Image 1 (cartoon, rainbow, N blue to C red):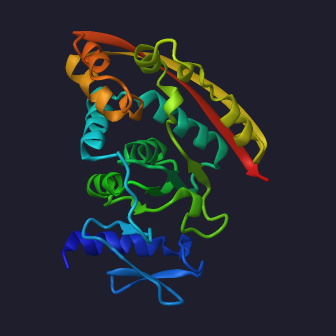
Image 2 (tube, rainbow, N blue to C red):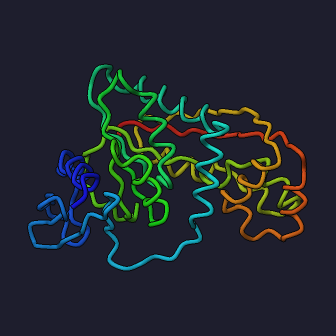
Length: 270
């Protein structure tokens, strides 16, 4: 066993109480730094990168290595979503009592950049336990490689999350497709897809909480041509676009891209 795998298994062991078997819902524990095992004997191995795959069958997604590499490069080099990450951290700071522990779940963590950034902004005011899950094995693998020394990642379905009830202080899910307003306008033009709004999702979200708040965050980033290519690669919105429209977009020397995001905040779940 490598020292990296053991260290990450120890980190997983430190928060094993939050996990529940996705097959029988019984409690789980780390065994011999190799697996998570429940009371009924269901076993989920810890990979060499330190993540656990809780899916009982493989799931094919279009979220591949190229997408996650482009996303990570754009996030790191241009701090593309830094204002969003800072705002989420500020919201958590306002809601949580200072100088306390905070268990945070990123439901749909991708390659882990958002969770890592939010946890960084929260420290040292909070002792943070960060856990991220995603259906994409490729994304979770990237997350574990980059951030696995400090956070726990797993391949899992948000709709059947392998966790005990009420075990997290904060659950976040960052960036649904409608947030990419400028990209939508360029690629979809007058298409009906352009007119999709977040109101229906906000309504469903609000219905689940006693307290609800909605904030808007809007800012502009100027991206040079290489970063426009990364932007195209990182968003699912371009999957059904024509090659011609993509070429026209990335042929620009630079473009001002507006990030216009609704942040939905719910507390006291019903």
